[in-house]
Length: 233
Image (cartoon, rainbow, N blue to C red; front, side, top):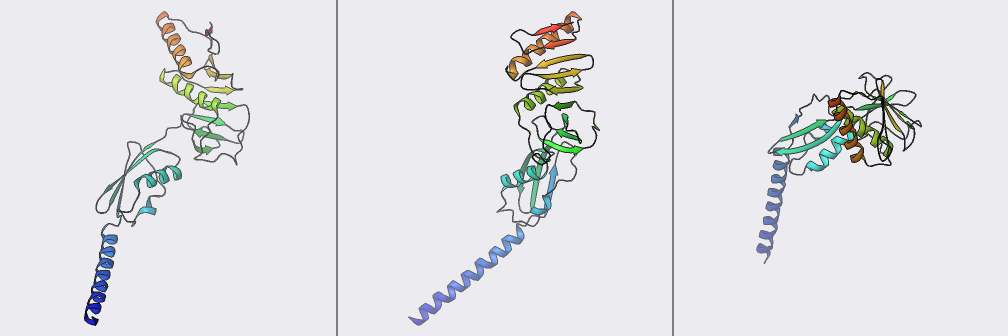
């Protein structure tokens, strides 16, 4: 009996030692050494990558890593993390491109098309469309990396993107409430509203611009707030 117990004890000890050695080997063998950034854009420094160096590749959550990198890097639009065993992580990212700036009195907030604040600056160095909002945004409420999801702001950004796609250069946008999104383009102006569907206003704008281009006409003012658009020459 004693020899049997002793044998079981020794067997347990040996198995525990073997398991411990296996875990140490696995932790070292699958330790992340290489972190490769794959981006079609010219990505600068991506913060947070070094936090994952020497982490265990087996235990690494690719989804959580992607979410963390997007949170720490406001310019990152999408991030996909792939494991390549035994020691490599590939991070594929796409970057935002600033679409417009908000004149907030004490400087400019650079915004992406989905309303994320990409950076702050004292000047509009990229000559982007300037959005004048009817109230100043509290600088302590919104920080770089946050999204501004006001409906009128979302509509304004959408219409700037739509006009860019139509090769229409927007100089500035005045948001004076939900029913007044005034876009100024050189010597023309277009008025949008949140009280009417985005898709309908997009359609009306595209049709009018294309028809006027065919006819060789140029409008001075286009108001899309009403059931039938109002055009002035």
